[in-house]
Structures are given as C-alpha cells and as structure tokens.
Length: 317
Image (cartoon, rainbow, N blue to C red; front, side):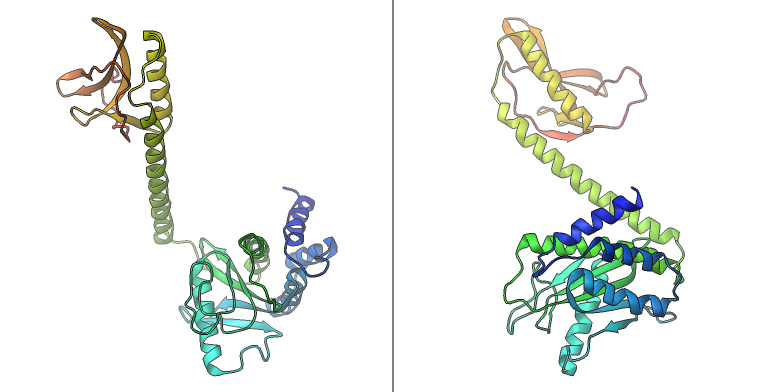
C-alpha cells in the first residue's frame, strides 16, 4: 500500500464518522502523518498529536496514556483540555479504573456515559463517570499495550447506534496503529521474549481449535439434511459420496462410522440386489481395511477430525 493510498483509506474512515459538521480534510490527515514521521522529541510530539487527534475526531479533549518506566503495571497520562472534566475524587477513581480496563482490552473500546444505577455491559464496558462518550485506541507492541489514546467526544443527547460505534472503533484503531510508528522511534520498547511469543501462539491455537470445532458442527448439521436420501443411480450415489468426502477432506475431517465410531470415508458400492448400491464406511482398523454399514440411503452423518496418517502408503482414510 502506498503512502497516498494509506492517507486515502484513513481519510475515508474518518469521514465515515458521524460528524455534526464537515469531517476532517485530506490536509489534516497528511498533517498527522507528517507529525508522526517527523523528528520532534516525545513530549513535543505528544503535545501536537493530541490536538491533531481532537481535530480528526471532533473531540473535546484527549489523553495519551503511556507505560511508566521502572514501575511495572503503572501508567501515566499526557493530557490535553482535560480540565474540569472530572470534578470529584470519586469520578477520578472511576475514570482511572475505566482507563485500566481499556488498557487491558488490547482492542478499541467506546464507553458511553453511565447513568446512575446502571451496570456496565458488553455494549457499554466500564463505568464512565463523565457526560461524554470516551473512545480508547490501544497502541500495541508485540501484542501487548504500549500506549493508549483516549478521546473525549462532544456531548450528544442520543446514544450511538451499533453501526456508529463500529465506525468510531475502526477509526480510532486505524489512527492508533499509525501513532505506533511515531512512538516506537521516540520510546524504548520492551524486547521480544520467547515466553510472550509462546503465550500468543497458544492463544492462536485455542482460537483455531474453536473455529475448527464450529466449522465441524456447521458441516455436520448441513450434511445431516441428506439423511435418508437416495439418488437415481449407482453413479449418482457414488458422486454424492465422493463430493461429501472432498468437502470433509478439505477441512481435515472424516465421517464417523456408527458401528465402531472410528473415522472413515463414506463410499457407495454396488452390492447384491441393491439397484443403486449401498453406502458404506471405509476405514482401516487393526485387522486391516474394513467396510461397515450397508444402507441403501444416505446414513445419518456425524463428522470427526481426520486421523493421523498411517505409516503404510496404502492408507486412504
């Protein structure tokens, strides 16, 4: 992606936000990129970054939250126009807890003002003690929070729709990803560790297994609609069984034999007086290649993972 295309995609994402007036200009987006790519020291960079972010999002105020050096778990904020937003120590403590929640989310978050007596929910996480919508964009390094951008949006009498929330979350995450480029050359970053990589790889495995299980359930439910079907000829029944196997094989799956519960391949074979053949479960057991089943219509299909490859080259299950 070229720099110009990059500017255009970010500009369009910001234009999509529900502005009361005209959205940000291309010049403002390029100004942000120029600031990020410039050589200002960290403090001066942040002092110019925050008002620029407010312009892009039509925000009232902003904070750049950074991890404190030498104090594990501690963060501090560089503020812009945050005066008079939090008027009591109780509001300040609620806001601090909300910032800590946003820091740990590792993804963009938007908190609506929390009316008295209402508990936080998945739609409105945390307890926002202000009368403004608070938008958070995490800046990640090696998958962990490196900084956090907080934007205080202007007061609005209406609650944001789900579509509007998604636009804000997308926009702030795109900008936070850009800000990372400006911070990484101005701040020391934690070194990569094997333990951190291992933890993230384990998360990938867990997510993949969950997705694979969902795919398996979806395929099984779809195939079970053919239970009891039979087609017009042996060749058509064989083509159906072949198609089922191709679908399952592409996802590393097999049908489960109802007789022995082992993974198998569904086939249709010509047999005796069965004019259109019989459906069988083809698999390798300890005794060798075995066919179970024999109904003349499509059996109830249950789906299981494909077994590990056998040493023998003749294994086709």
